[in-house]
Image (cartoon, rainbow, N blue to C red; front, top):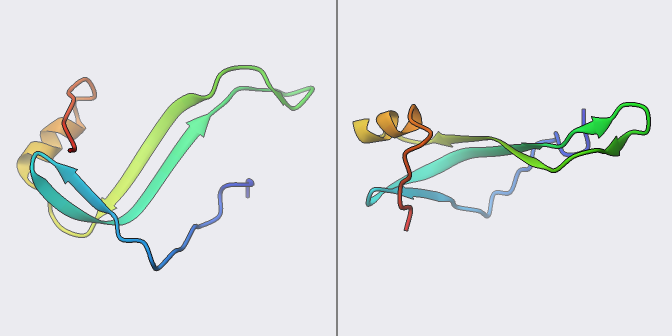
Length: 79
């Protein structure tokens, strides 16, 4: 288990995912980054790169969200 691989539980946080004017309650959120490490020196050898975001929502979303999820080049306004 890595340094930041433990569950972060905080019962006082309410998170809302807002997209295309609709709001969804977030049940779970995970984000991960990657940075290359020199195996001999165990030191960083590159820039931190983006990784994956996983969001679990508490209800079913509209069909336009599914189309957006499979097209990584499409941008949405969350404001």
